[in-house]
Image (cartoon, rainbow, N blue to C red; front, side, top):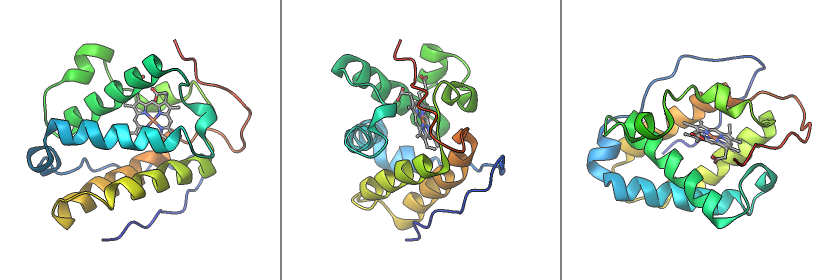
Length: 152
Ligand code: HEM
């Protein structure tokens, strides 16, 4: 398994390859929801916890939205489209300041979760490659301007 984190260069938005649909078919919707939940539980105790919702209701909503998105991107039901509309994720992430360092922390939390999954290596690798590249798109700040996400 190669969980290397590509070095970020500013304003770089490399082309993204979606994860293999086997990530959903082999892992199931429940598996993806549990993975996302575990990732958020690491994030809210990480160096970038200030970016994420504090109260349980908002946190559960965030988990649901993110899991809906990953299920959809892997070729599953269009839950995200139905609940939130077009993803436009870079735009949604512009609500808060995400630095290159925040991206690294976010990805490191995923490494912890992905390294525990019992799935074929190529399936996990495909999901990791997607996160590693698409996460470039969410970086929008050179330094932390202390801009908080609007927690609705
Ligand atoms: C680069 C590091 C990233 C950071 C620091 C980050 C942080 C955040 C934060 C603070 C939110 C708002 C609170 C919440 O709803 O959780 C959010 C929402 C979300 N993020 Fe990220 N994110 C990153 C990368 C990504 C990537 C690579 C993806 C997809 C592959 C992604 C998918 C989402 C989705 C689907 C939402 C929910 C948007 C909505 O409100 O409908 N994020 N993220």
